[in-house]
Amino acid sequence: MNTLLAAVFLAWTQALTWMPYGLPGLRVTVTVLWLAALDAIVITAIHYKARELLMVAILAPQVPLAYLAACFAVARARRGDVPDWRGVFSRLGQIVDIRPRQRKGFLSSARAQTWFEWRRHGRTLPAMVGIVVPFELLLLFIPGNDTAPIVFLILFAVLFTPRFMAAFAAAALSTTTSPGSFTATRPLTSVELIAAKLKMTVWSTLAAWVLVIILVVVALALSGRMPLVIERAHAGSEVTGTLRAIAVVLLVFAALFASTWKQLVQSLCIGLTGREWLIKGSLFLALAVLVALGPLVDGIIWDRNVQSAIWNGLPWILVALVCLKMIAGAWVAIRLHDSRLLSDRTLVAGAACWLVTVLALYGVLEWFASSPLIPRYFLGAIAILQIPLARVSAAPLALAWSRHR
Image (cartoon, rainbow, N blue to C red; front, side, top):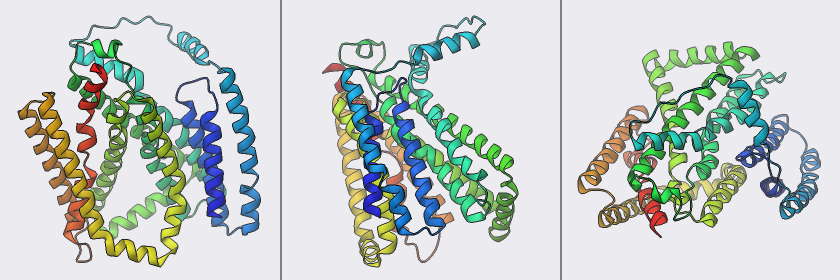
């Protein structure tokens, strides 16, 4: 069953990503929506304990359908038959925007670059979230989905949607143009260009999460599931205490916000290299990981031998990952120093800020998950691995190489 599900996901991923679309960014949105719908059907069938023959009857026809869709998509793409729907939306925008606006001048080129980055890529993540999350929240309105496990499973999927969407939005917002173009001649250093992108990613992440919170509150209120969530929240606060419960909620939202922002910026250095094959390869890898995640987790859950091997080798796995991250960070710092992209003072200040952030996260984890069953080295390794270092620091190197090659 897992093999058939993986084949269906792979077939539809290829078909939908090959299909030409009339708006930029719509390819990823349609692909994720369709795969999420298939995943929801499979999860619902498993929840109601459907027979394996019924599952095969649902999944098996998807493979030839995806093949036919892929043939149609490739044929249209080879003919150059690509629709253009931007004119329709531009005319709608002109109808809505009836009052002429006078834009004030920018105080600096850095602010102008930040505005340009937002206009170009900042709305990509909120738009993807605004399209996918409402379809996920529609599951709350299905009769029978009023039990606590199902409601919280839907909310869990919704809260992790921005992080998954950020992996796909990152490929679009990190792209740069070819050498000799306007990117290479802007009156800004490579570091200032990266700073503008980082500011844009913060605002984009904030807009996406504000949209998620609004949609979740509205959906819970309209579906009548809000009393259930409030009741479980009160029960949890009675067990842990009101102050600790509030701290846990704030910590969870801060972690989700930070992980979404991290997904946006951690592949920034890949996109800024200007190599198209590397950018598209990273996007395909993200889709492949998304497809393989379900069967992989299912295999780990049901195989005690795999669980035992992972648990026994966990300390060495963490040590290897931490060492690799520190080596990569040191190599990037040396390259930044040699290329004079950052001053010595900036490098030292950046390293100090990273260390303070790691210690702060370790302190929060120690306060939240302090237990004799959880060793401190595990919490320390998690704190080190969760804070971005090498890939974000390598973004100025990638942009400088792309601008001057």
